[in-house]
Amino acid sequence: MPLIIEKNPGGKLLATHPLSRKKEQLIKNSDHSRDKSKGIQAYMETIKASFDDQKKIQLFLEEVEKRYPRYMRDQLQILSRAVKNFEPFTEFALEICIKQTLWSANDFHDVVRHLARTQEQESIIPSTDMPIVEMSSTYYK
Image (cartoon, rainbow, N blue to C red; front, side):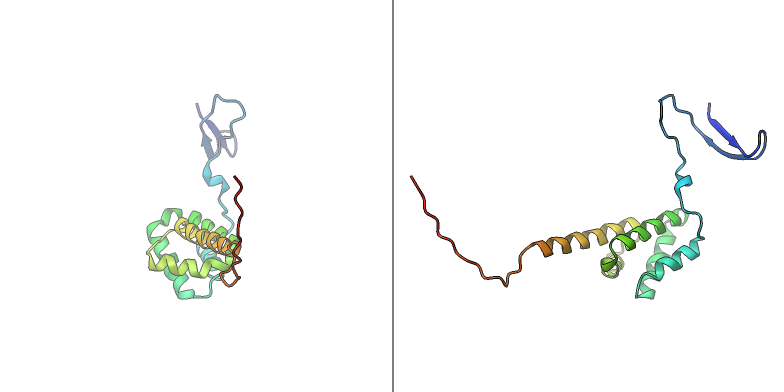
């Protein structure tokens, strides 16, 4: 038997949720966590403002929307997080996604995260400009 949530008793149905027999299990519709404060077009404009090359981001967003029209808000949320968390790498990631025809926010996120990790590793590895000092070792028997 599901949990039925109505605006008023016997009134407009707001939501239904399955009941769990387990204790303290959160039952939540994924729709409840979505940011509904912005319309899709306004959200797209916010994302586009984060990029320098407006033609490329417009192309990318159009391709994503063609493939995932029903989940466009989710795609935009993933893009927004990627832009916020990996800002210095977003332009290059966008170029890679377009060249490789990777048309999803998850692909973009994976590319931008890879670029950030690669950059992080390069900064840890010492430069080859440093002189290499040969060390001799003595072996004991």
